[in-house]
Image (tube, rainbow, N blue to C red; front, side, top):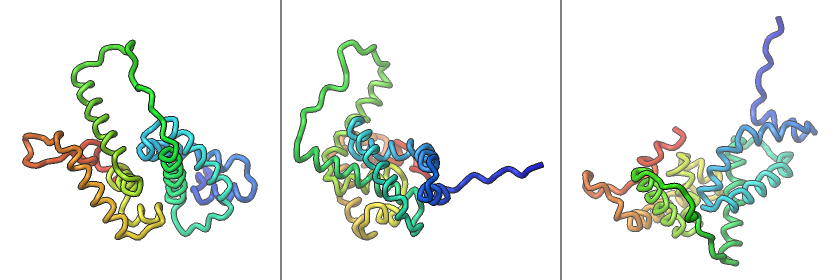
Length: 203
């Protein structure tokens, strides 16, 4: 009986792609697309922009894969490319601001009260994130939403650990003020955190 073939690692797929395997990169995308999409959406806060940023990122990764030196995890490398593509989109959008279309139409079915309250809370948090400068939003998304460590986030963004800490601290301070009205009356001074709303990230 033939022993089952071990599934290739991410690094194996990168090497196979660089060697000309036409299917290797597609498998890498399949493995990580959902997680990369979540990061893109939380960073740019717009589904169309997130989709475009993700496409840009995967094209960049496809072209740069042959230069991957395995000095970091493949997922960290992909995250860095996705976040950079998102930040590029944000900068272009700020240079050419547009008026967003309303997200909800008049023909939508009625939403139960609890679901409506949860949706309103999510929208308030989204709006608060939108008010953060891009250099603070990206670390907040990676650390507080995605659950990455400070050092992992620093590697993805290409900045020092201390810079991640300071930007997160400033971002959290602004979010605390913006979201102060969402304080839980049963908890003295408790401001809802991403961990409490979304779990503890990926850990």
